[in-house]
Length: 294
Image 1: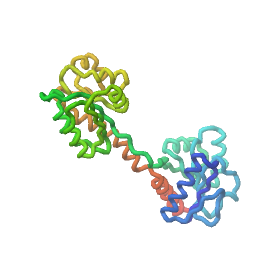
Image 2: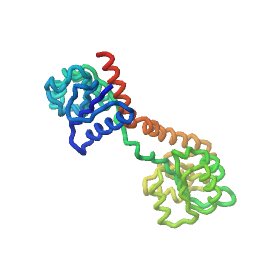
Image 3: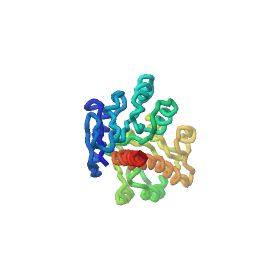
Image 4: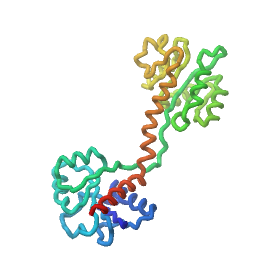
């Protein structure tokens, strides 16, 4: 299958990027393809990016090829008229969402077939991990429930979570966490500048002690940081500001962390899926189906 990607957008604009990325990935997938400014007669597919700059002339749409175009931002009378004027020459329009595809269908603009392919990303950014902070010294009586903390947090998904810990007595636990490849920012001593810096970075402040409360809660309130802790003492009086209230025995902490994990995994699934290769593969499926039915 020979494919011609027709780039009608300006250099440096986002849709030119679409054209170039499609061309590159088609090449990587060993397809014979071209990147040009006009349709070709010696190909199977002529795909235009974007419809807005296509002209109402039969000669620009070779009859023996499959002619498709990218359809996006079809949202005013000028664009409705443009789509209507070229629809008779097109085998299909390809939108960037089912929502927009359904919108265009309701407008009855004359397009024979409509398809939707979600836009891709560049896959060049690491997912932002859920950053949890615990800022407290440990004591011999275990009042901060560090043993429970160790048991739960050493089993976290190191791809999804990271920690900031400040306080004395955490060294052994930090070593165990790092052994499990969990990223930890650790400081033995409290220095307010470091503490505030780490506090600003975190997504959630956690406190597992059952001893009336932690003053870090008050700083979290100042910054509007979400919290995971037992409503107790002044934390109880301000319990409406606790994002995830914990039971006194902390038995619901695993459930809270699982919920946070599942929320992040939703993004991870689409991060892994919505690549440029996926975008091109979905177009290939459409073109093959059109070619088979023509």
